[in-house]
Image (cartoon, rainbow, N blue to C red; front, side, top):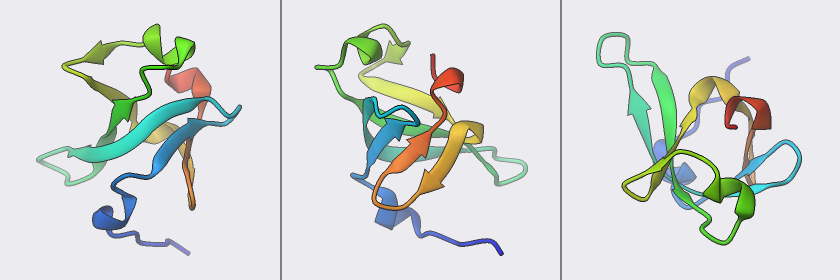
Length: 84
């Protein structure tokens, strides 16, 4: 059964990896214009985290592939392997 979430409910949620690294806060999502499917999460990176400092942050934003999302509840949990 697919659970639908309104994007507005996601804004500001913490994005963490499966091993607990705080990547930052969810800002927006990137969609494929042709298919309408989500391709990436746009995250405001946690600048205090050493792991995040090593990632490809452009214009103050971090793109996380949507395929890496493992769960959405109190946090958005993503697979660390697809972020690094």
